[in-house]
Image (cartoon, rainbow, N blue to C red; front, side, top):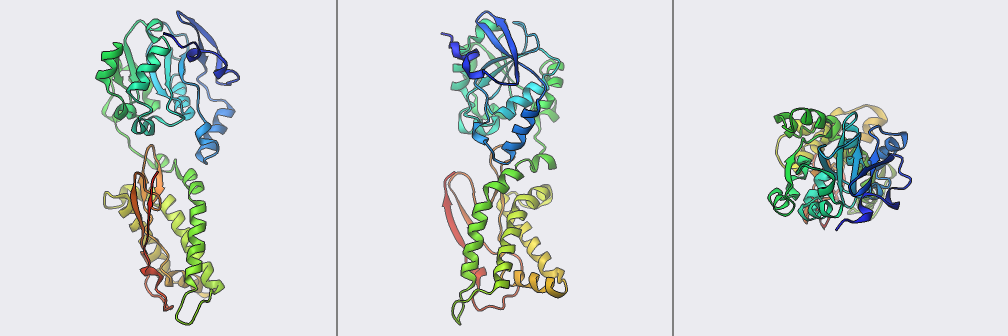
Length: 356
């Protein structure tokens, strides 16, 4: 049975990336443009900063690109709009069908891990959109990063469609199609170049700003403890806050930048190394005058914690503070030597258990 809301209806009304419909055996199918509008670019920028992230999605269903025929390739993607936008932009000057799965606004890789870009959703979407009547062939082109969520043999058994896995990057789709749907080794490899490693930096800065502020306030409060009573010095408080935010930036910016050159496989270990390096640099720099006193105050308290990165989903660079899937997180002091105060805050280790 064909779901009449799958391919047309009020869900796509007012979408700037639509430019008409294509008549098919199941009725009109929305036709999408391949060029990004100013609104598309602003939307992509906004979600990088966490603005409207979970609302940035397209209605699931079947879409047409160019002037598709029953023999035109059929590609599958997620309904996270950035994923959808990259696929349609890669198809400029080509004819294709795009089948969008309902991944709840999550990108392909993360959705495959969560199960929303999965076998059941793919089979259901093929049937509800009447794909059998639109295309004459029986081949689906899925993104390679969606493979963990899809059982290709099960899709073939229940629908008759053969699953072919495309390249990792949407930009390689034209070359993949030109080669007769054959991928080169480079198309199969996720390289995580600098630009890709920093892709999540803005949203992580936003996501962890409040935890960083709370951590700074906590350590400022604790820094006043001593054998002579409770007292918070202004210079000391500034040093603590600065150190915490140094860690905040080191974990989110410096660690991803240096990721390929840092030893160890564990991301928490990589984060510990960058934290120690940053702390050591602050201690050994030994600037003069007020700057020296300021840096020494930071160093004396050893506030540079080992905050690592956790790759969770596509370029999801998390601070070591938040580790996915029931991970115990320790904030351990690393870095500078020397502490003039009797209260040794560097001996405090905070354990928190989080569920993400």
